[in-house]
Image (tube, rainbow, N blue to C red; front, side, top):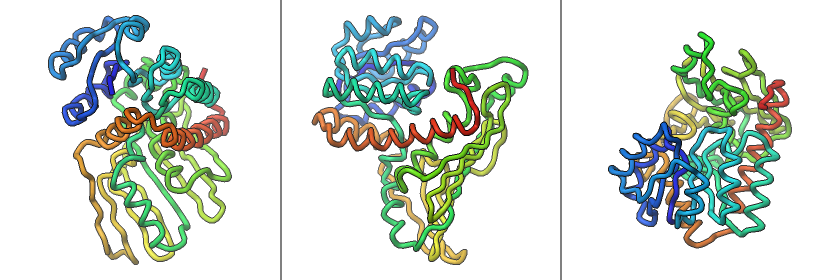
Length: 325
């Protein structure tokens, strides 16, 4: 995989250290803004990136990349991914795929017509611990309640309260708790249980953006609730409560540090089978294989999953009365 990185923010600095262990990935370029130039030069020197660009269109035209990793702010995912697809590049797009469901559907159609890989970078779907949890569901009995909490006080919230609106709290740029933290929980739930029958989002809204909220998903036989917040902090954990046993997920849904299986409050099994310390490694190994083999069937399954996630997001946005444009 010859990779062009679009973006130079925090997620890129988080991703780059694992590239030394991605044996089939070559970093042929990074594209950012002029204000990113110093960071990009540091990245180039440290991680052997071939070329630096401050013009994304130029990068797409000149680079020999076969794949673009779209790691720009949420509101730019659609336009950056679309340009890459139209330039004949495969696309790995950071979560959330797009701000609007219609944008996602358009990208999916372009990729289909051009026979290109289009996939969402969402860690939990590829983690060994998550796959093992999925297998464990058949042993715990009938599921009754799923509860998730990913509350993380944002250091940008203080600025927001003082009137400075940064992208993470800007509804016009895909900001808010739903689009940031709850995306991980939604992917977690859809990967295990599929599409719910009903979606409702009860949000705390300040100046048009959801700073925190409670998402409820009705699966007929059981109910799921996902709490996420950027204006408060709380222990981050998830519970899958079933008739025989309860599964406790330790840590955020996008990391899946480990999980415990509990029977009447007594721990009977602790599971931690992660194969790499960094959460992003397993997904990018999967992307390497998918792209190198042009595995459109596997990509289709991943897109079907992301499609359900985007439908839930759209319903949640409508339910809460949020306006993202």
